[in-house]
Amino acid sequence: MRVAEVIVKILEKEGIEAAFGIPGAAINPVYEFLGTSTQIRHYIARHEEGAVHAADGYARACGKMALAICTSGPGATNFVTGLYTAQIDSIPLIAITGQNVRAQLGKEAFQCVDIAQIAAPVSKATWCITEPDQVPFIMQRAFQVAREGRPGPVLLDLPLDVQRADIPFDPDAYAPLPVHVPAPDAGQIARAVDLLLAAENPVLIMGGGVLLSGATERFVELAETLSLPVITTYMATGGIPADHPLHVGHIGVQVGSPFGNGFFLGSDLVVGIGCRFGDRHTGGLDVYTRGRTFIHVNIEPSHIGRIVPTALGIVADAGLALDALLAEVKSRTGPRSPQGRVARIPEDRARLARRTDYNQVPIKPQRVYQEMNAFFDADTIFTTGCGLTQIWSGQFQQVTRPRTYLASGGAGTLGFDLPAAVGAKVACPEATVVAVMGDGGFGFMDEALAMACQYHLPVIVVVINNGYLSLIRQNQRYAYEYEYGVDLTYDGRGIDFCRLAEAFGAYGERVTRPEEIRGAFERAVGSGRPALIDVIVERETDAAMGASLDAIREFD
Image (tube, rainbow, N blue to C red; front, side):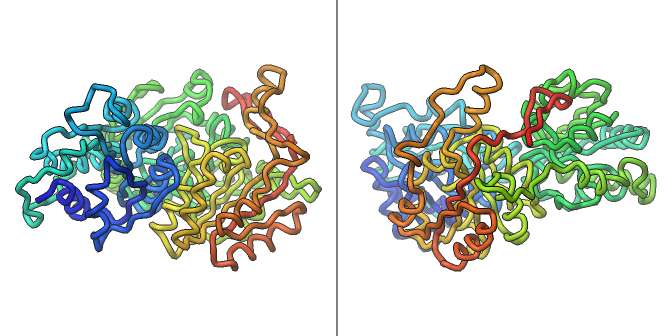
């Protein structure tokens, strides 16, 4: 069987149903058979980076892997940012790139670059397959690596003559390799419960690994059984409803809240499950760790003790660890009622919430998020990338369900939002999907709107438009006392995003007054096609942030 056909057969056997990519001469043999697949639907991107973000958004939304595929040379190198974005957020996907023939490797031939080496630092694993007979096993191993342990993207680079070769292969004899899921040590679980029951002010941290393992309900059950307050990392947004009486909310130096940061600083025991203690979450480590004991549960051994001093580290799948913790807790004690500061969480959370009910013109950005919270239902999927729009989103959006808030967390990738929204819509066609972005970020990947229009995927793009690279403007202003190179306006205004959206075939509408926002959302949904709402907001509104949890600068 032709290797190109073998590749598609294996993709099908591994459960791939969606492919996002751009064909080219070095990958056309695979495209021939991709085009005959009745299982895999291909969506043509307009930029290779966008193809990876779409595959990434697909995986985040539904938990299944997708394929990103492109040709060699600059096509392959355009994959790098997407791979990095997926890798740091632990998102599994398979990337396939075409390559020049084996005889040209290492000779600077046309569009011949060592993408396996280039992508290795930002992928979980990469292979350039130079022996046709090894294709089935390496692909089998690639899928296993992507799924096992801490998930992540893998890349397969396929020379053109390898794709054209013939090898013996029986699709019916192929089966995916098993994925090992590590269980926790019983003694360590017992010790963790000892510490929990002895602590005066413990907190639980839900990390993104809890969502990836499908264990959010078990996490909430553990919290409810012992009336333990829950802090969510940014990647765990939606893992517990925003209005749950035990939900403290986010903490951190950007998306944290005054209430959340203060509550955390009053804790004495921190149990982090499926988190990695990233710097935007912790801020200054001296403040974050002072006076607190840490228990860390993570599937990746190298993460234990890497950032915070860990009194007890448990290497395990988050779901299996939560099963064990629940069983141990229930064997020792009955349900507890919330007391003291835990009982006051709903009241204090509301009292210390930042304001969003602004009515002035130009529109305050905070008001846009208030309107989104009021209009879109709990099943709506939101994507967001980087910038003040993303920080405000993390501060103000109220999310109640897992896998409905898809953010570029560790990479902070401008332009992630729109192609990720396309992938999420493919994964969850019945859901409303909204990309929340700034005018700067939209310019990075606006061509993904063509993919949405071509395949009739009615995603909604909300552009919070202040005419600035506003996060960089704020950093320049307060850290360096200057402003340069961040103003995106010209000839009086800048890009007309509505006309640009219409050029792609989408619905476009500009909003300049707060009372117009809801109606614009209604018309966008009612249009039945991709839609862009360009919300003109106050230009120099700043976002609360700081260097440590006890030194956050607030702005009106």
